[in-house]
Length: 71
Image (cartoon, rainbow, N blue to C red):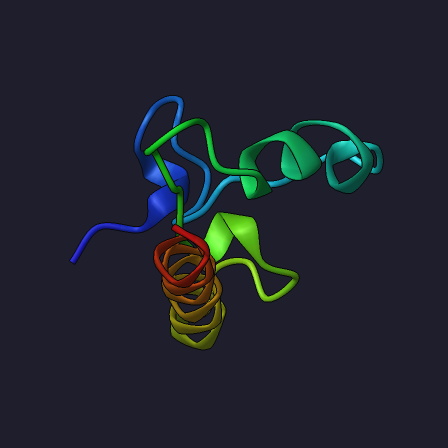
């Protein structure tokens, strides 16, 4: 066991976002880039929680399903 605060440049187990994150990079990463879809807790409003990662994965799978049905 090592406390996160004792590891240089790593002050926690997840990244903290700035106030404008959800209006900038977050919106860009939510959209598919051709055949690339991103998923993870960092792409949900439940950052640092497994539920956020699962919800993000569900969103990505739904987007892929919609693309397959449309083709």
